[in-house]
Image (cartoon, rainbow, N blue to C red):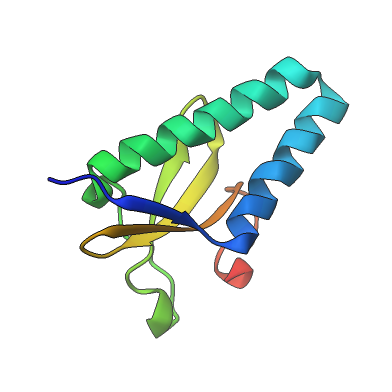
Length: 104
């Protein structure tokens, strides 16, 4: 399968940066950098096999095609995405304990 073009929503960019800032303030810059690299690696993994993430079971009809996958090395964080022929659209990157459907 051909690799997807990766597009991030504004919310996804914000999610990445906010989590990196939190890791830097709570631990150190190395953890923040590891987070950013793990997110990037996960994007690339999804792009190679976009159907690998299971479909979410959200109630809203407009979210029926949303998939999720874990961030490599950060198993409590989820990446939510959808894809079409040539585009992988990253919706959010959030901790799995949050009200997930409410974030959309």
